[in-house]
Image (cartoon, rainbow, N blue to C red; front, side, top):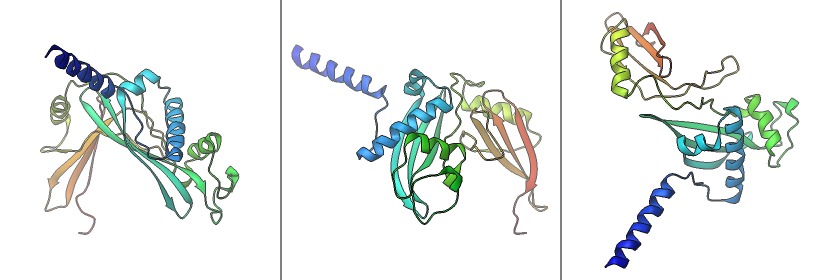
Length: 220
């Protein structure tokens, strides 16, 4: 009986330790190669330590897809900070089709898998929809719960009865570089008969709120 109990304790400890690690979900060596490159570039871009990555980033899925421009590596992962669990998606080109002639200044080879430096140049230019999400490696949010964040918004919004979306990270664009903080957004109706609605977003680190009015529907 003591032997069985000891074995169960060891197994429980093993499961606990495994849950703290960040294991790959790739099913091929090619996928694993580009997951490794993604992790390195993601950490570099966000000045993120290995310790922070292990404690806050959990890879959910990866795959390689084909499209007109070639092949992409795609990854979905979760960022956990305090109470917030935020699903994020990144992608980048790993092979360029010979028929693709845009972004010629990158000098990418045709029909050959790209190396780390070529991928880095592609991401920096946001070429072929390639992107890495900017995630500031913070440990705490301004609010101690989602309910607290909602309560703060309700007190500070100009309009009533807001509906809330899940926390998110803003996407990088050619004309916009996010600050790397998570946000929460939402909106509501001001006057449905007049097609008046409002939207808002709040930085979950600083508590800064942006709100504006908009049409409820563009079809009216």
